[in-house]
Image (cartoon, rainbow, N blue to C red):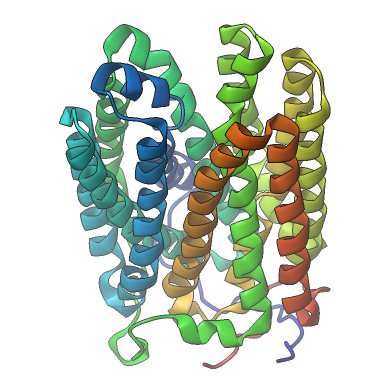
Length: 409
């Protein structure tokens, strides 16, 4: 399917009382990042679970993977509800469900309650995240790039910070502490988001379709969905191996913990600039640069001989991701009709959750069997191949630079 050229007139006028840039960053971005942190807190406490609760590494790998799978299903099934006039309700209910799952993981001391809590958490995050993105996209379409850049960078920041939160808190405060802290932050931010005026879809414009698979017929959107997933191949592989590799190389614990924290900071500060760059330079072009560069950085992690050199390379990687990580999300927002935005963002999130879950399980196995270099090589190779597939799907919109004329579905 070919895609039309851009239009200079915003497709959806901003609503009165639309969220300010600071509201988007602090309230919506903060909530999105907190939900994502709930996904990531398990990565650095595998040894703690084994030591305290006698839960094996492979079992925790299943818990991590099934949380992503639950998010995958939830984003496909529940995200379209936000396009049918229920965006605010989906956010509130999704956050409360997510917190319930986190608290169940906090009190669980055996595999079954922790597994159930992870599933509940994944379902809640999967429902809330696309609805939050829809609210932000439609609040100010002229500044879609910078606003979505803030939101998506906060999402990745939170996902990357989850392991750091666990690394800092579990030692002095115990295994339940990171789950409780993330839950408290989510509940504190929720009232600020719930009070923001939401541009709900008018009744006669609400899509009849329950799911959003039909959007994949738009080839540029299918490409954006694939590229969004590649982002989390990269992040999922990075998080899964970071602590293991630094333990293997004998890196000081404070350097390993500082590295994953500093890695996340450029995603916040460069996110809005990266979103604007995606909208003006071209989201598919920017995604290609960022993802191919990311694959190169991952290969470097597998070849460098010391933790200090890996730390230095990771800081360069963080700057690259900060400017490019939001490109796929911006691309999707530019090619999809305004009344299907939540469903579209749900498909992107489902792709991310699925690929992150697969990489979290596969990467750990490859590392244990074949070592660091092969594990990073597998991640990098996956990034190169899947990115090429996404760009081929999006080839009709390669030169897209501003919001294009919406396509009727």
